[in-house]
Amino acid sequence: MSLGQRISQTLRNAFIRALHQESAADFDRKAGVAQTIIAQSADILPSDEKALRETLMQTRTAYLDVLAEKKVAVGFDARLSAQKLNDNDNQIDGVFYPAKEATPAIVTLTRQGGDAARFNSNLLEKLATALPVVPIDVNLYAYSTVSVTMTPEMGVAVEISNWTTNDIGRTVRLDKNPELKQPPVKAPDAPKPN
Image (tube, rainbow, N blue to C red; front, side):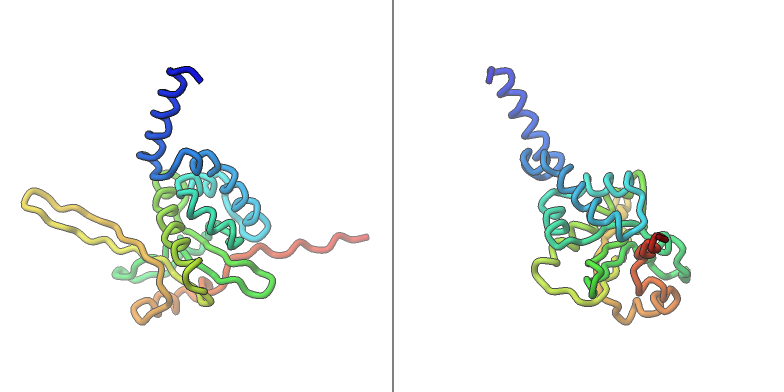
C-alpha cells in the first residue's frame, strides 16, 4: 500500500469515527446488518423500505447488531401519526411490542423521511441499550419532551426522548388511542386455491 493510500485510509477512518462515532470496520458492515433487519421486518410490518434503510443507516452498527440478534422487526406505523391528543399531550413517537407466540418483537416508529432518520435512530439506540440487559415482556412507548434552557443571550430548545411503560401520566393517551396497544402486523397471505 502506497503512502498516499495509507494517508487516505487513515483520514477516512478518522472521519468515520468522528462523524458516526464508530469504527471504520463497523461502519463498513452497517449496510449488511441493516439489510438483515429490513429482511426480517418485511414479512411482518408494512413499511417504506427507503425510509427504514435511511433510519437504520443513521443508527450505529453496535445497536443494529442487537436488533438483528434479537430478531426485532422495525417499521413505521401510520396510526402513530393519527393519534387523538389533547393540546398538552405528547405524541407517542414509537412503540416496542415484545415477542409473543409466533410474532417476533416489533418496534414501530412514527416519523419518516428527512431529519426523522436521526430522531428514529436515537430511539432505536436507546431501546437496543436496554434489550440485552432486561427481559422486556410489556409494551414500551417512546415519548419526547422539549425543554428550553435559557441563557442571558438566548434560549435553547432540547428534545429528550425516552422509552417507558404505560405509567400514570401516559395512560390517558393510550386510552384515547387503544389501537396502539396491538402491533400493526401484516395480515397473513390468503391460501392459494388449487
